[in-house]
Length: 148
Image 1 (cartoon, helix red, strand yellow):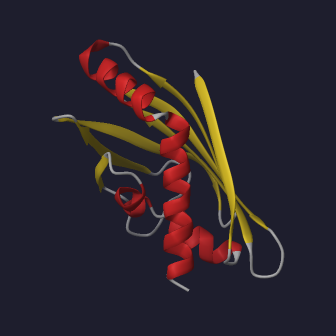
Image 2: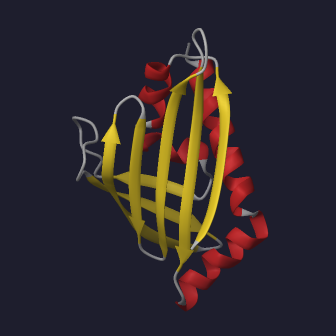
């Protein structure tokens, strides 16, 4: 399994940060390969909540199942992804001074074999998993700070 992580400071309270990053429906805003998110529980995420993420690129579209393993709003979540991409995404939101928060993501991932898995593996190698995560966390920061 590969592991990447990224963090930055956001000019918003942990609760404001959490309201944005804990809503999977925002994922397509942060990652251009995420086409849609389906079946997100209307009443918010809890341990055991499940939803689907549709990834697409280079003419291929696949569904990845997401299951919330642990969640402690507004501080922490751990979500397991299953499909051509197997991953665990861990998110922390920590106070960082007056009205500021440190947003941190860690992704442990494994790309399965087969044609679709190889396509995604090539995409991750070409674009760089760390760069994708960096772009995503910066997009989250922008969305949070713009909404204030």
